[in-house]
Image (tube, rainbow, N blue to C red; front, side, top):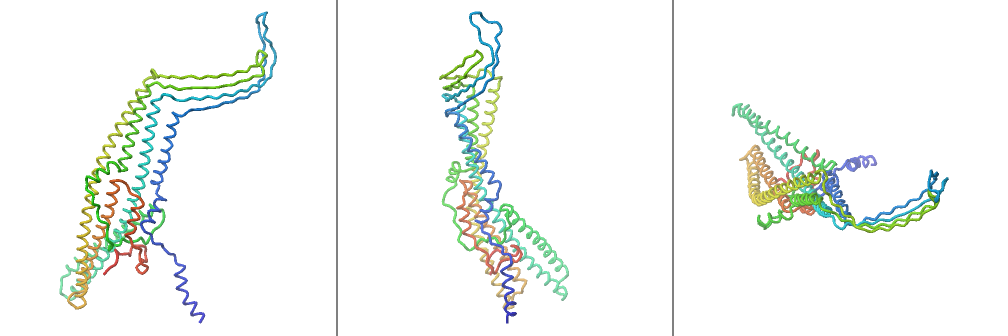
Length: 467
């Protein structure tokens, strides 16, 4: 009895000790990519670096206070040669201590160059902030595109395998007809050629699935399997009721790429004005206090000195060897280049909004058309199976109908992926993407069932529930 119980526990122990591959949804893939992606982390480091420019430029307008102190031991030997007979300086060896301290304060009253440099620093920080938010938005779009690209590659593999099964059955039927003398050998050769071609495309589809998974693993830095599939039977969000002109107007004010380009152009223009303002005078107020005491000196007596000063410092560059003119010309050329780049980005953003808007509108209509085609293909497959059961259809007819159904479902899934990505691209073109967009897409996914979990990665997974 104990032996039977121990034998019965072996499958349970093996199942418990077997390595389990956790399923991954879009949200978990995005979080892993955000923690691993070096481009996103580099943009954050660049923004952190840019934030230090503002306080550095603002320091030119704040008071500068400095203090100094000194203490010394002096060993002095002096010998006077000549001199007046009425007053004789002492000669000899003197040792004494000396100490002193001082405080100085300066405040800029007029520095036009520093003012423009401070404005340029603010524009630079705003541009860096826009680029950092843009990196977040691009990461959302990239992860979603790679995720749906993997699902599409997996669906295409399922279609290729269905085609291979149908053509293999067609080839076997042609060979059977040839052996019975009902058909020439050319029919069998043509069927074999079609089967071998689809078999080769199946191998390419398997490699495409592996590459799509490798791209996701490169983003996350960890192996991923059993990705959640898209629930094709869930109601998709409808396109927005906005018009193209409204989206274009919003993009001119909220698009992050355009904001970064405009911020860079504004910073370059401010730096050009700062370079031109280097010819202007600067006025600085200064005040200082110093105290020095020496117990002795070279004349044999000590000193105590107190000095208090307050005043204004005016500086005006007259000629610097052409350096100021050269810097001014270089800054003007840089500002012009930045303005042209911002105008180019503005035109590209306007086109991207128009393209994404039209793709979303067309994609939603295409989904409804392909959904109707998928229902028709499902009904045709049901009819072929019913005909095979009553004897008026053969297995080859059923396989061809199944192949047509898989192709229609693959096209429907592709249109659905394209529509969802098109919505992301439209929002990214108008403003920017956030983690909330990932959450909304993740709600459309469904976890893989235990019964349909693939035995070899995701290569055996299909599009979804099959009839």
